Image (tube, rainbow, N blue to C red; front, side, top):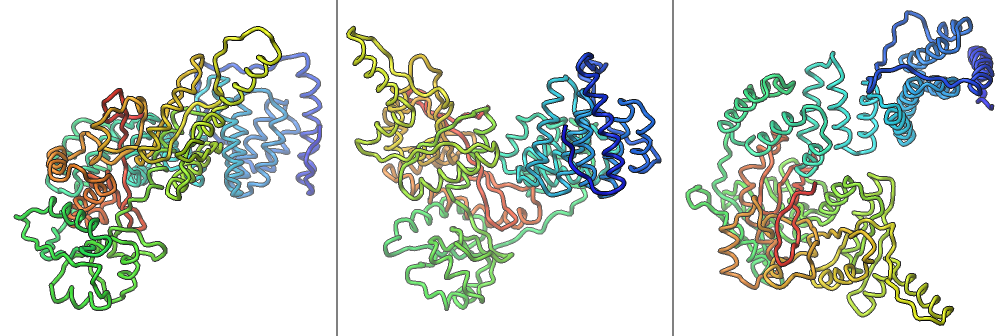
Length: 616
């Protein structure tokens, strides 16, 4: 056995102790099996009950039997961490691991190693140590201790996995009898940072007391900007969850003073009303007018960005006594608008600037498809799929979505999905067959036919290592691709679930024969999918007025509708991080970067019907 060199008198002494113990351990474990007497599903409890220093504990181990000495080394490792000496703690934990076969001790040492590695900023190695600890727990049928979950929460935060971090934090809180109100408040603040789809993922992970936390968060998301209504729901929550730790949070929320109502009497909307983008601008205008309440007392002032001289806009807005600005819509105009230092009015931009940071009084509505890919990859990666494949069209937008999906999947699972790019031409089927491995099956069959003179009846077989397909393409491309997938899946194989981005769905095609898309599951905004959140009456009216409107213009209409609704809500979203807007483009959340991001819903084709579903 080889031990790492430790060049100091203290380390030399320890090396001698451990070397002797290793010899004893190696000579005895051949003939005897060490077992540990623990009650079924016992909980690991970590305690340090000693007045000795780490060095004294190691010296004491010289006079102890092997099992007691291992306990001393474990305590010494913990004390080294308390003394801010993670290198020593890590070395000692790793060397002590070879001295014991007891699952409990190995588990404790794995957690100590993880804490040491975390202190040394070796986050991935720390996570690997926690995975080792978890495997020990599963095999030995134990329950995790407090230190494991506390360390896991820190590690997952460092890995930028907020859902997993909060799950671990809630589990740590449930095991900590000395938890403080500050910890309760910290949990609440982290919950408030979750988007709607992240919230749903946390519920499925089922941490302790999540029902009460989730119920409170939902009330805050939906009603947090309406003080009177929110207070009624808080009172209801208190009655339903009278022993829940979040009672402390509710008490604090009840003390918040009612917010002052912003009265925006004059609102300027900067959109293209002439020129090449006139159609898009007028559709946005129609969406804004659909949301307009004539009883609100506000006046809308539409400004044509095509003919606008941006350098004179500040004076024009001042002359109109403008309180709030919506727009511009086009990215180039957004850049020009942000470059005008004199424009300091509260503004909701309808596009995201490429490089410029937003001022505190500026907010941008994000319609980036990359956000959708992150939601889809995170959600689907928790469905226990191990070998996904991404089928993406070659255009730039599809490539961006596919790349983001792949990166997010790898970030969560550590595995990079295979990506296959296709063209919507005669090569599509051959590209799909190659990606599924069907072409290899055909080659093997032809080879057998050549070698054997008798005729062979055969069934082509696809690759068995693929368990999920994610398509990134337009509706027509997906409608051509999905049947190819169905035809090329072997009758002997399990059905491979197929998912897609909203680019694959068209509300217009929902009215046609969609049997070819049966089974396809996709993300979508409420406006484009019959759902609880959809404004069904307005959708029906819009279809009557504009029956042939394209999907891209439908998106702009929904964005216009949401933008006017947001004007009076953004101040609440800034002051109360838990407030959400349940809009037609999605459930909107304001981030620290002043960008409004969306949570989308899921839909599924079933025969000729398309319906909203929940991803289990």
